[in-house]
Image (cartoon, rainbow, N blue to C red; front, top):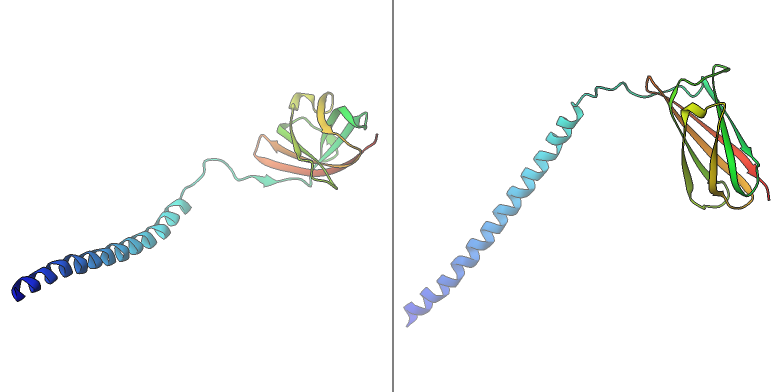
Length: 159
């Protein structure tokens, strides 16, 4: 009977000890491999070269003029003219506007301004100027040679 008890007790101890050792081994091996892979992956990603030229900010050479007609609450027409070194230009590839109220967060309106309308056409702006106040218009332009021009303009909207 004593022999049976010893066998019974050692039978239950062995799987418990083995399972604890196995868990310890798996956890330590998993953490080591995971930590070793992360710097390796970052190192590989850093070596990737882009075929495109990096964007260069040329905001000092570009200027923009915005005209809102009528500058009142409601639907308005927005005209945009671009100037390069003081002369009117249309060499921009993409022009986007972000319009938001300065004193109150009422969301931001994104407008893709048609490049063909620069300096001569308007875009209808609906549901943006919902109340009188000051609005910030952020202009982000991209040239064909991947140069970026940014400008912030504040406009007043009346009743």
